[in-house]
Image 1 (cartoon, helix red, strand yellow):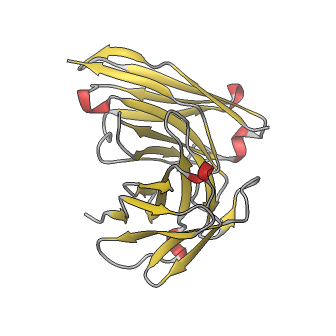
Image 2 (image 1 turned 90 degrees about the vertical axis):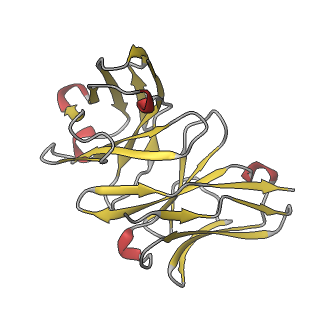
Length: 118
Length: 110
């Protein structure tokens, strides 16, 4: 079955960097686009970034553009999110999600918590 | 900036029917926005219920259905159960590689 497992979260000081990972299993990773979605404590879901199935395109929400970079390593079935210049408002649970085409999501990881302290 | 709108909260009686909607502050939602619906209970990861307007994800009961109603996307729950008490999020594809989530609807079954 499809499984997505995020890791790399933790407590980090404002202005520092953190790299999240999402290991995929149970499907052909390089056939799917992948997203990062986050959820601040007590708030709703916020789309963060997407990478095309072949890695050819990446897009970002305005709130993270220029600071975050999404990438993928198909040899390791792994999705990454490099987060630089972190701010308090980046504090959230970060989920990876699979895109089966049709501009949607169909599977989610369990999330990893990032806390940015000032 | 266009915002995706959802009812902040709704309630339904057990066995009843409720419709959640997903709109835009500017313009109408259509199937070309590829609306999808996701359920989340507290402390859990989201679960996709409906994708591409009206396609149920694997394992989702048929009491959940998606549609376009007027100028909004809609999620209808028919025969609501206590287990359906959750937060529900819609998300729209805005084009140019950008997705936007609605603020979510907290559904109470009582």
